[in-house]
Image (cartoon, rainbow, N blue to C red; front, side, top):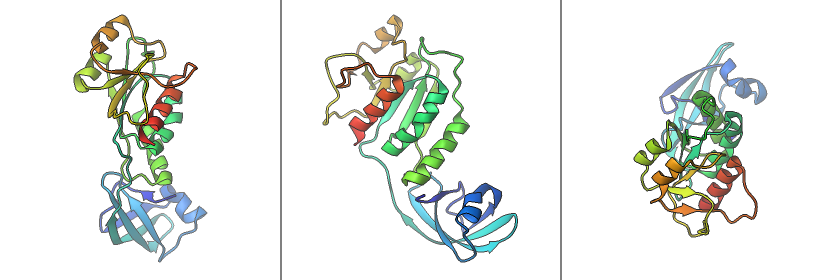
Length: 222
């Protein structure tokens, strides 16, 4: 673990619920005088806090130092990902967060299964745990978009991942790209996307949606 998350990190003093941070006080057995690194995942600062009081239900920490320590991927990548089974999405989020994807827009395409609902709070917890492990300074942004049409209105310059001869290379400068649903784009959606640049992946086999998004992010960001 590179740091511990708390939404109020940066204040002069933190008051922690012992049960909420059970791994710190029971597994790692940290006590009074211990100093730990904390982040709020909103700014680029790493905050060091010392435990000054430890009771049965709560611990009091005081800020002893802070330093700017930015850990983000370059270049910045925004991915539009047409909705698939949320259980699969949740299993993939940690990898995308570690790779450094800046933002994911979950898009409901015409062929997306509309009964699939994205649990934003659960995904946030997954991203917090992932960030603590990989050291990322700010958490990946997420949003839900109701249709391909709305997505293109918000991101008119977005590229498209599709089956085509133009492949994503090591020097591709893509900042935003849309990955279609498992059933592909509808004819109506293709008419909306016809003016946008389309790219394919260099792979002889057909990839599942979650494999494609990880491969894509790896190709662009690493």
